[in-house]
Image (cartoon, rainbow, N blue to C red):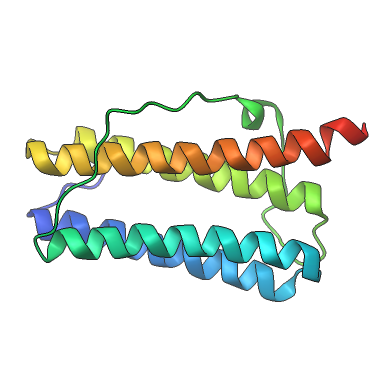
Length: 150
């Protein structure tokens, strides 16, 4: 895990990651069939909300609460997806989205572990839980649409 010289540096890193995630989901939506595009625009909107929260924290707004824990369904532990979105079907798109959310959860968990600043630790743990919620919502969609069809 990268070491940060300041709270602002850690926040800037997290903001850039959220911006990258939102851009990724918007790019996927632009290439997807209309019914898939709506879902991925929703994912992009969620990432943009995280970016806005982080920017708010930089401006001195309240940190996120990290007390509510989210259960991991572990679906991504057994799924493989191609990282190339061109021509991906809905199943492949959902698998990659789940893996990206799992990676974001890990990122925020690692960022929380890397800081001694209690408020920043709490912020990153709160964002980790939000990423876990996103992953669970994608897993539920996967279970509803993909697993029930098989």
